[in-house]
Length: 377
Image 1: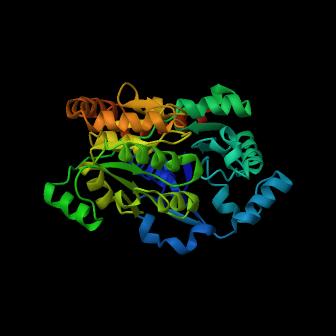
Image 2: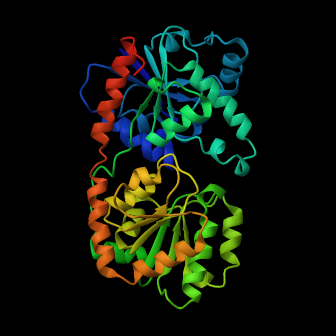
Image 3: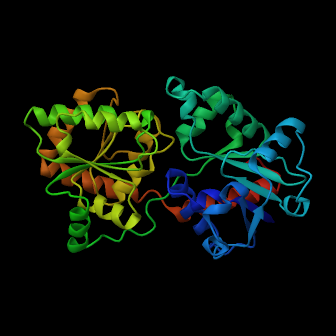
């Protein structure tokens, strides 16, 4: 069996990459007889050299632009006539970027992270385009991978997909949590101008992440005089200008630290040094930062929507993401009760242990074999 994998997300830095990279790395080291080949589309040509991915599996480059591939598949509903040697040698293609390819003889398995634009269409001007794309991907794929039971249910509810066509493959917790020593943590905190206790958020700043409500809640907790900790917001600023403007207008902006994107060696120290992790997203396909925080033993306060309750299980506290008073009250309560935070930290560690990249990779390999042999799952 020859399995081609769209390897573009392995080069990224966002949530998709943080799910796919450890999953594929673990998959390629399981010692199966499957022959894997990484495929790199032209849109990624300036972001890598062969050595970046060549240590994982053989690497092939797709020279045809994405637009031409998509146009051909959509217009003619047929395999692309060029690079037949590449496309026709694949028994399976693992579609990690919702390209929706049509192969000459192999089968497609598509990975679905979330359907947030369909759950929150008021926040996404392109939600109709997204729906059309998802419908094409789901129609062309023999089987689908969802990263949570909630995403699977969304596929059923919003697109009418047969649940038998969908397999849930969760992310794993951090492969190996190397707790940084106090000196390293102190160095990173000093680098980012963090002193004293702090609340931590990690993620993007787009509208569905709901960071503006988090800032509002933090203001209420601070101005009431009941909270002394700083708020540290970690994540890239390319999406979320309105959130940055909201922070700039905050009466407690001096207590809010925006780090921007940080490398993993800094991120893990920021997790390790935090007192409480906050994740107010309106909707998530899973919420990987929550799992990362729990792997570091952080007490977690998160939203009660989407897949987030599924991610935290019996650990943490979930509240309405649109209720800043509930967020403010829980911030104050948790930061004022060290014993409760320690109890929640233990619960977080137990919950994180339930998620394993090895189990996820084994499940994905089993799915490949089943689809290849003729089953949908």
